[in-house]
Amino acid sequence: ERGSRAARVDAVVIGAGFAGLYMVHRLREMGLSLRAFERGGGVGGTWYWNRYPGAGSDSESWVYSYSFSDELVQGWQWSRRFPGQAEILRYLEYVADKLDLKPAFDFDTAVTGATYDEQRALWTVETETGERVEARYLITAVGCLSSAQVPAIPGRDSFEGEQHHTGAWPHAGVDFSGKRVGVIGTGSSAIQAIPIIARQAAHLTVFQRTPQFSVPNGNRDLGPEEQARLRRDIRQIRETCKWSSIGQPYDFSSVGAFDVDAEERQRQYEANWQKGGFEWMFGSYKDLLVDEAANATAADFVRQKIREAVRDPAVARKLIPQGYPIATKRLPLDAGYFETYNRDNVVLVDLRETPIQEIVAQGLRTSEKTYPLDIIVFATGFDALTGPLTRLGIRGRGGVTLGEKWAAGPRTYLGVSTADFPNLFMITGPGSPSVLGNMPTSIEQHVEWIADCIDYLRAHKAATIEPTPDAEEAWVAHVNELADKTLLPRADSWYMGANVPGKPRVFMPYIGGFGAYRKLCAEVAAERYRGFSIG
Ligand code: NA7
Image (cartoon, rainbow, N blue to C red; front, side):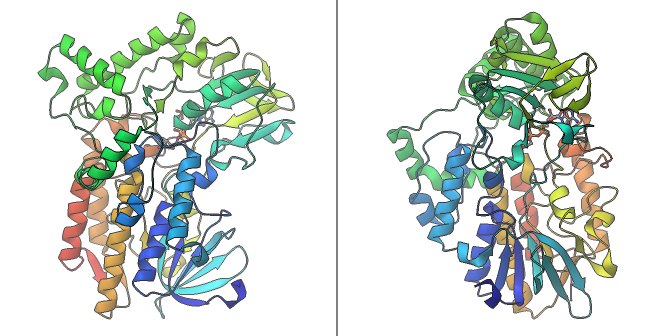
């Protein structure tokens, strides 16, 4: 079948996750010819790859989904407040089948390059199978956290046991029973996985470089009554998400932390702690991410919770984060993370005291000793936001790659486009709000904006669109200026590129809020694509 596929199309879409599936659907409905490539063997994106124990979304299930089709919404029932990986993957399979999207994709086919031909205003996309496809529009739907980052620890290849990165987990699963397991990293992925691995393995050693604040997720089954209520109210709930700051349906607080006294603050934090989820942060006080002293009240509350949860004070001390404001590294949500350290079969190694030296055949050696291990889990994160894009080998005008253009940090206009790369659209690219909230909300907005833009170009018989260098410059400055008004640039986070050695330190997402961003994008379109040059 593949041989009969078109070598010249209107659009190429890369990726079959939330973004790629919807983009393909929209373009097909508009009557465009297209090819779509996915490096995985099926749909799902993040949820195809991240199959580690405990993997799941930290966004409430009823908003972690598409809202564009009532039929899709009403035809699906979530079972839990926070959906696990398997359920989300089933959901995306359901959508792909319902909209008949799978036949549009070439699976197991990574894109290895894309070159812009200025003369003909066409992209030539190359795949790992050696195929070349020409297209007017190139649309990346490759996600923000899809380029796994494995640290260059000496001796990694000499390890005789199994080693896995959380973001490239074996589909057959990993059998931890009776095994000595080491987890490197304590980010969101590790914090989801550790309690479960601890219950399955004979022994677990956690290698921690930076302690994390974490908040309970308060996950639960959704009962029939709640499900019925959600089905009834879902349109309104989704509308709230669209215009909220992080694409979530919370009661965002309009009160500052010091508008109330210490006792009231404690009561409020505790009440929201019992609810669980990000609402603990965003529903408590409005100034937690901008005011250092306000932030410290939240941080101290969590520190106290850690002291209460962990029996051994020496272990608790190692787990308590210091030196960066809470939620300036992405706040993890957990189900019994800190309590896991009370188990007899779990040991915490503080890498700030005893750094990793090397991986050896039988385990991992720190400056203190060798830990014998059968399995090493790299929960070491991703080359976030830019990594998934730069590795595609996209070359714009003059053969310049995205990686070269972004050597000092990503440069985009609205996070969706970049100068000298005409007709390239990046769904949830750097400089968009995406990773600072509920991804499907972001994705739908971008897909719809891109579809409308392509519609406009076709209606006006325009061959190309790209941002002006001035508009791009102004956007990059705006993104930085907004970030600098917050505490977020203060932490060594993947938002800042700090987790990848050598990556420039730039706060990459747009922090002005989903609603404000949506409004701005709509205005740009209404003003005949202000800031873009159309040719
Ligand atoms: P994260 O949040 O980037 O976490 C990675 C963890 O791995 C973090 O604790 C890192 O410590 C640690 N790490 C990274 N490199 C090393 C080395 N070389 N040695 C020791 N420890 C290391 O990735 P996740 O997959 O957990 O989560 C990514 C996002 O996915 C998450 O935020 C959600 O948005 C979904 P560090 O803090 O850098 O010192």
